[in-house]
Length: 71
Image: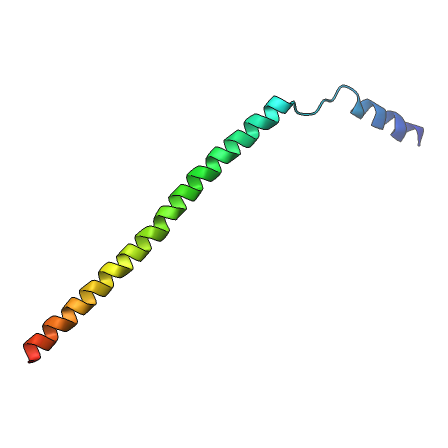
């Protein structure tokens, strides 16, 4: 038991945590990465809706032309 206590005391000494500056830098980097991901994913959703509208327009145009040909 004494061995475990002395080992725990040795491990705890001399070890420091992260400084506030280091934590802020990590949070800043994670925020930048999150912003880039959100902006790129948001662009994909807008593109999908636009492509769906173009496909719908083409389908309507084809149907109108077919009905004009059939009379």
